[in-house]
Amino acid sequence: MNASAPELGNFSYLAPLFGAAAEYRAEDHFRLLPDPEVRSSLATDDKPLHPWGASKFISSSFSAGLLHVEALTQLVTEARQVDPVSPWTLLRAALENFATAVWLLDGKDRVERRHRTLTLWAEDFRNRADHEADVNHITSPWGRTGTQRYEEVRQLAVSLGLPGLPRPSATKIITEAAATAQMEPDQTRALWRVASGLAHGRFWPNLRAAEVLDLNRGPDGYLVNFGVDDEKLEKLSKACLQLLQRAERRYGARCKAMEMPARS
Image (cartoon, rainbow, N blue to C red; front, side):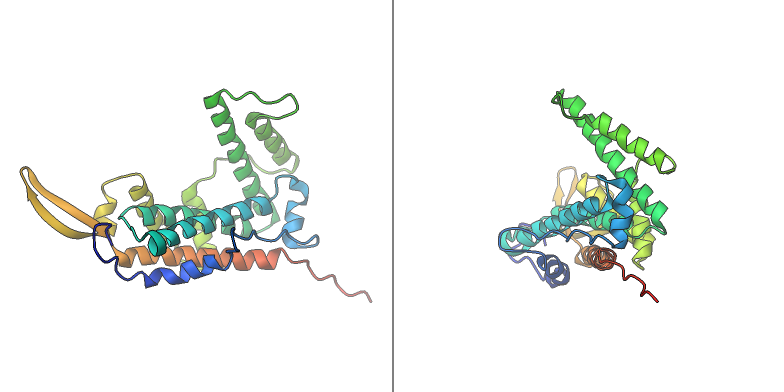
């Protein structure tokens, strides 16, 4: 599976994930998740959070996951240039995206779901404020800065009696999303750690998720040529697929209007 190999090998294990993402592909774009119906569980969650509801964040995270999968699809099927790092990097991002959607959908009750939503919005505005500071952004007279938006979200959380807005942890989100999706949290988290290590150019993931393709003696030792371990990458692709499908099912169920009880 290294880029220099004349044959890229058998990528059939990626087909289920590629196919699931392709269900959302239109002619020249990816379809968005539908807006929740007015009397749905999700719309009820979102009502006091307007305009910072969960449905916007879920749809954005889910769409980002689809685009990361699409990028890998094109790399494998069109460019046919697969290096030992890019598949892990793309699927790591997709895993985080789908896990975030699941995490927002699967809080144990309405209070927890709203709190999770506002922690992510707060982090979004905090990151925006950092970027505005980096580029010395000047907000228009009628606009709001990231810092001002963060404060609005914080005040909303206070008004709803929600405890603080801690920085969301990717580790926590992935662990809790995997648990509600009936996956093994430790194993899912381990796959994410390997993918993150490869994305950041660390050395240790090569020992845990790479296959030695060649070994050449050099003047000061050996030069090792690593490739992707298909068995381990397959596990990551399956984890992405399970979280995609969980988000899909839960969103579909929670965005439909609830049945009103019949009147006697």
